[in-house]
Image 1: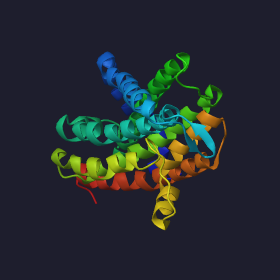
Image 2: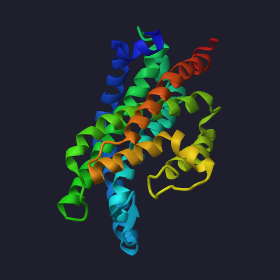
Image 3: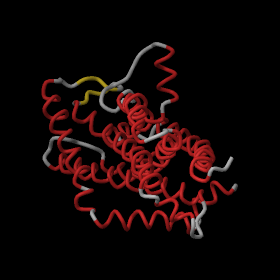
Image 4: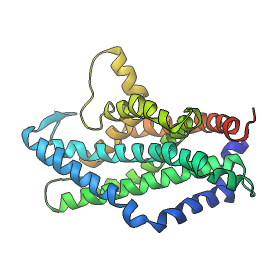
Length: 271
């Protein structure tokens, strides 16, 4: 295993993760409020409110309500957006404004440990926020508004952690590339937001166009949303889960060395 990947299992990377966790715990009660309220508001506004005007529709040969369709998509979207946002905005602030990275790099830590620490922290937070969404969905199930196969939910969280790891590496790529924090709106609104909404998260994405089919085949977020949906609505393990895992692992293997190389040039002036 080459050093870039071996660093993920070394204590220095866990130390970076522990540092971020310590800082987060100081204001966890306010930091956890948005991920708790957001799914409740979205499920009520779109799933119950808008969904009340949408009759049941056929999805993969079975009738589903819009609320049932939306719920798994929100899980995928939460892991995606939380991990990416943390690896983009929060990591950039720690790198550029707070000078946290500089302080870490004068210790026994190397840049690859800082990179992996950021990725692991973003993935951890993305998984925790997805767990909060899962608890909200459980509350909707108790009310009778939502029926899900909860026995399959245990398979979802490890997959969401892997997904958040992959999307965190994508976020760090933009952190390494954007010239200033003012330019972060460009990848966020021109790349990430379109990706989030055209991945079968909030509405079915179908079509016979070769371009549409290619997008669906190569889009890891689409496979994540559809795989979770088949698990929670039908209790079926499916090929989307395998495709999602493969694409996420490929993203991590490719982007970690790229992130490290670009950040080494930006932070240390090397290469």
